[in-house]
Image 1 (cartoon, one colour):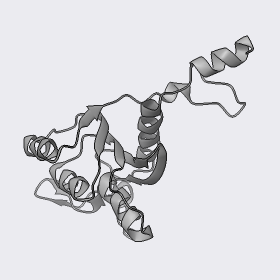
Image 2: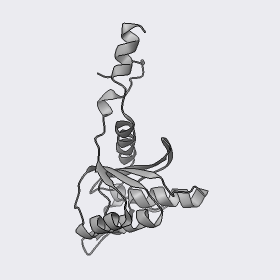
Image 3: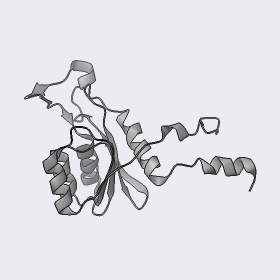
Length: 164
């Protein structure tokens, strides 16, 4: 193997870095003015769905008109995890046994949905407002929660060269 080919492969992202990075890319589509969250649902190293937090289809976006706050929460936005699960439901894609990669630790409501949908493992990058009851439910359901790191520095540039 040529040296340049070897060095190119030695900086190859791990699967965890790759899917964590994909969740970060999805977060770039967020229309939430408070926190950009993205996720991907993965089965057998293939992305089967993705989601980001923002308004429902056809509604105004928080980034355009502001958040619709009720009891300290924006009720206009739907969470990234819910968007990805609903994408699976809409298109008839099974989530049983799939993994979830998400930029931020899921909230309690998303946690309950993920457990009910049969998500096998939750991989997250940032622990944002960890909920003790969510952690308890995930543990009771036997769903491991593992912190991973994205690696956007290894993205390939348009000229085919790695950015490192």
